[in-house]
Amino acid sequence: MDTDEWLRLLVAAIGGGLTVKLLDIGYQELRRRSESSEAARKFVDVHLDPLLKSADELVGKLVSLAGEDFRSLRDVEAKPDSTENNDFAGLIFLTAKFWANMEIIRREGLSVSIVKDLRGRQLQRFMDCLESRGVRIVDRVSQRAVGELMLTDRRDGPLQTILFVEFVRSMEGRPDARRWISPLAHTFSRTRHTSDRQRLLRYGIVIHALIDSLDPEHQVTRDRPSYPNKLSKRSWRDLKYRVFGRYLKFVPDPEKYLGPPKRGRPRVG
Image (cartoon, rainbow, N blue to C red; front, side, top):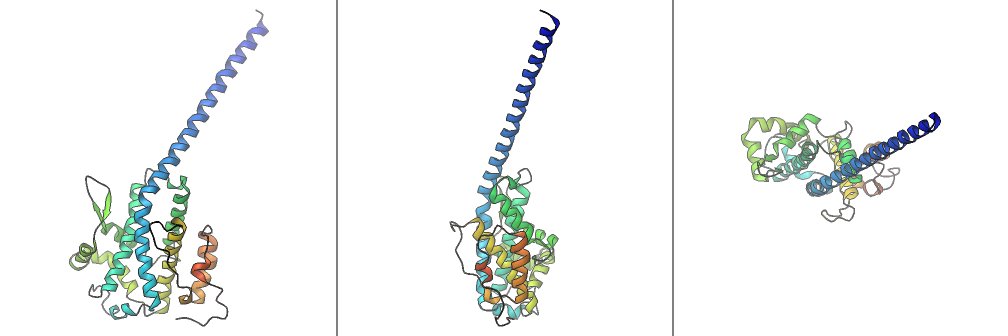
């Protein structure tokens, strides 16, 4: 066998081995991506329902309060740390429970890339939006601290949230708990003021859109009406062009929360 034939055999052998190696690398990468996507899907399946249920309770409360222009909270302005008003304490609890479920997803999802799942990507967008400067109702540190206060870590099971009575007991008896809850209580105590009331209305609409987007068939939540007639022109524009126009473009029916354009509507308080 001459030199040219030896070279042809050597090149064929090298080329064949390289092809096999490349195919193996490609297969391993596809397998890794598939396993990552499956892990994300399972994680979202487990953690989405508790978040949706807590969001549904909070939105139900905000819709009810919006319908009465937050009148039942008017008597707490002078003492925002009081738990005597059940509507006030209940609203704080439901908000804290929702934030606690967000905190559980953050903690237990450290090893999972939830954006590998479509619902996970949308959920991440909602969480980012709710914590953005123009939407959030307290600073991020306070929000996460309040969420942590709601958590109970059982050694033999996953993280869970505490019940209402235990939460109120913490508010009344623990100075450290009152310290972190105070910014949220202060926010809810200022519903006499138009700007503060509008902040809560905008925040509630983003959570409402989260529910409708991630549970479109409403298997674990209720299909509730929104309150577009309670929005000021400024809130309408902010939601229309910044929230839904930029951050949450995938929301299928933003008109449900916004209603028609504000032109010609009477100014709301």
